[in-house]
Image (tube, rainbow, N blue to C red; front, side):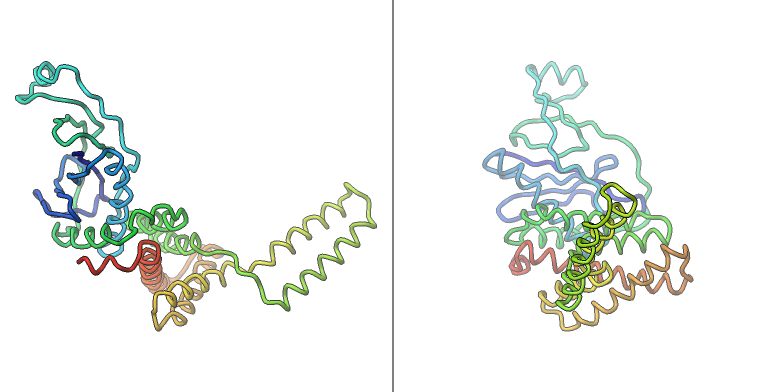
Amino acid sequence: MYTLRFPFRLPPDREIEVTETTGELDGLTFSLVKQDTFYVLTIKGFPTEETARHYINNVWAGLMWVLLHRGLPPEAILEPCEVIYIEDPCQAAKNFRFKDPVDGLIDGGSPAVYPTEKRLLTATGGQVSVLVTSHAADVFRFFREGVLFPESDKVIADLKLRVAFELYGAYFTESSGNAKFLTLVMALETLATGIPRTKLILDLLEQWKKDVTELNDRIEPGSEDAASLEAVSRELLFRKEDSVRRQIRNVVFTTLRANGDEDAAEMGKRAVQVYDHRSMLVHEGKLEPPVLGTATSDAKTIVERVLRARFIQRAGSGGKSHV
């Protein structure tokens, strides 16, 4: 049998209140402990090294589900480290002044997969100051929920969704109100995709493009006019897709509607208002504190709901039935 050791950190103002928590998870046994600056999930019961390595994807999904529900953004490496095995475990124990034999060494800050019976030495260090506490039982409730979605391991393969989660996690670590707000909007921008404009506008753009092409045939190649016309042609092609503002509305509306949310249209409108505030902040450099506070609150609500819905859509909605 094989074991997966998965360490992660939290921001300086977050902590999980835990001494040592153990339990069972879909046929596996797990524990959570605090070691130096890391929280360490240890999951045992994998039949092969490959299945243990692949389960890192499930762990990431579980932690993202915790992030959505408890605002705990994990800092974690996803690539497992190499386990350095020692030829003489007893001599190694003497060298490190340990009572029991030492079978190998691992990087304490990276995931590691190893045979369960092996005794490994880890290297970690540092200190973390703590302000906000979450109870371990509460964290594990949501972690278990996230891991047990039918295809939780597939969530990490959605690269845009993964970036959006990273940006949402960064919201909790940003120090300034402006940065917090802009980070949330960036999470929505990451998920937004190009939307074709209406047929009327597309036909008009196509006619303009033909006019530009005809004009280009009558001017000298390589001239300033030719360069300007080329730029206009590219701009017209780009304009076939709608504005980021409307893309933001669309991603919120379509995601929440697919999730069965009755207020999807209203949330789409609020997302547009949030983006308008973002534009004002970027272009003018300032939002009045009450406006910024309301816009940030709205943005956080929208991002949480969109990410939760996207998570469920990617991982499969059956996860909650296991809770």
